[in-house]
Length: 256
Image: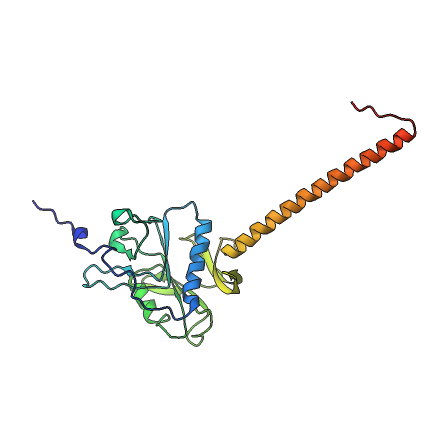
């Protein structure tokens, strides 16, 4: 009996387009998700069960020819390989193909609003809900679409409908992180960015900030060592002065 293997006949990520070649509308559409990914690479550096895609196609429909991806500005998947091994030993994903990821959907998608409206507050919200993405994040860094919504809106899928989550930062228990806005520095640019937060609302720093904090700690440690050296030198000088004064009085100290 011939066994039918459906995955064998589905296109692989090597065969699917890895981009629709549509340019981003502004620099922040690229930088904002890359910052979130960079922070995860620091705080989850020992984990191998996550992937954060930036401007990468998500292929989810098996019965469409040719397959059409949905392409968020950023997305996070948990329970997947951090780095996939492709054909001929090549490493890294060309796109995110559900039938190559054991059917694991992203748990969060991010859309960064630009001057050219892309349906973030309506059409894309419907699309991601139909795809059953648990969290949908809309960020409007330059307030281009302020009449349509708030600068940051975080939605959770409840019974097939996105429900906006209150507060900021918004804690996402299934991910174990919060997400929110704060002024910070990334790639030398100081402005408002999206950041990850811990359960207590403490912001995880950007790579720039983490590097600066490490330099400050190193400088403080160096200063502490210098202060200790100076203290020891002062103690030595005081001991020498005391010994000299005692010798003037005819008192010799036992060197032993």
